[in-house]
Length: 198
Image (spheres, helix red, strand yellow):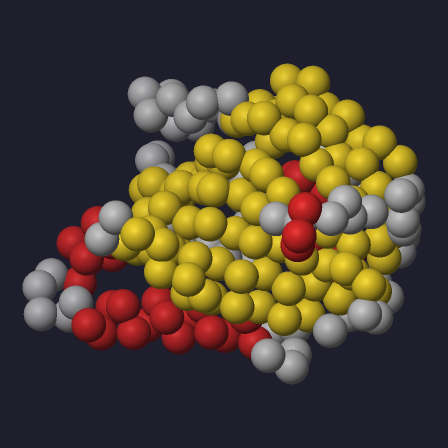
């Protein structure tokens, strides 16, 4: 994908395709049971470093368990993100999303490439993580300087403003970013999303 908006367009096309495929029944029922507004939560956070090579950016994050009886209760994170390099909008990013289906991972369900603007992409797409964990600011340019960013039982709202609807299920997100030919990080989150309650 060449532009930053292509990922949003592709997701919108997937949503439309899903609705068309299931249009035989009641569309409202399909929207409520297969796709729609959601609550997301992380289950496992880990690294995907190639050949067990230590990269300049690493994370060691644990998340509290999601309580389906208290779906509005924010998930809490404990751990840290460590970086020995500056991450800014000169960096590129790539997000590969796998979906769990028939008891196995279907790889590359979505692939989003951002040739630059990695910091801004993070800030715009996962604002709570950017602010709460990486101590980012709303105003000014987007830069994450080298350092250790610690969280201790910190609540994080997993809202994704640019993706308001999503099929419900289990997902695996692999985020890589770097600068030029240098790979800075390879992060993985195993996550789930469930229908949003009123």
